[in-house]
Image 1 (cartoon, rainbow, N blue to C red):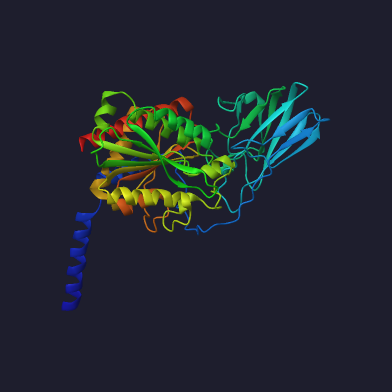
Image 2 (cartoon, rainbow, N blue to C red):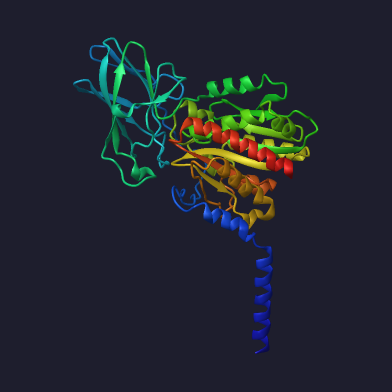
Length: 435
């Protein structure tokens, strides 16, 4: 009897201790109340091996039809086109396959089409083990894109629901006006490694923005890091990354606006830069982007599953950089990884782990939502931090920095993406200055 009573007393003490040391109910309520409706996020990521897997590179060249008067091409960076056939009556079918399998269903495509006989043609998109996720974008120069007119877009076997691959059509047919000038047809806007580097260089004209190479990809493309540091003695730092997954362009667009705001000329930005240094790797997966991959690096794996074992040179380059800066006295006070998915959603580290230190992430989310109430953004706190595997867990576990995966919707309007990146930067600067 005495033993039983002692066990009960110990259990009661443990329960009291757990209650005292658990995350504040205020934080939990913030997360729960922000997931009422809309996109609820993906299931918890499976733990997968990240050792190299074979990747099949697509053949690059030009397909010609109609007595060599009509042409399709994938001979440019970022292209994805694996086969073309002519079906008669100005109807063509193109096939899109992934770099390897199994793979997340993010069927990227990008090709050019032109003809010596200007006319309207119909192009059907077919995919390997997938449905048609991305609404087509058109461009006359490969730089300026706009969505195809809805009247020129036909969904075949439409899906069910609002989000996810099951909601996407099985395939689509596009009506294209083609001329002698090439027309780019892409899943999202093209931001290849060269274009990203050009953007980085444009910011580096500012005296407090610099660029360095922190590593090389499997195909020896440079991993560029941007540093915003107006006061060299500043040791409070942010770590920002983007584009681990090649098709996730909307996350990159928001990150681009985020970085432009922090490096801008506002009084808030100047004050922030006087106390903080910002490090950013805008393009984590240059090989995947330039090769038109659906998801993976040239190592054949998802980089955002390699933050535990570091089998890939891209993730190792960031790991080694953070280690060197931490050894040099830098304190990382915030980390963000910009991605894209079916709709806007946040994946912060749950405050069950991060506690009071992680409260800033939820405060940040609320301030963004208060300023941009026109689009609801859901929150799904990450409840698994070991094995670290994904970037946000690695940032928190190894550097105790509040961290988040910041996801933007595939079809989120581009002006809103830019505004959201700007607002996110402004509100984060204010919160970190208050600390």
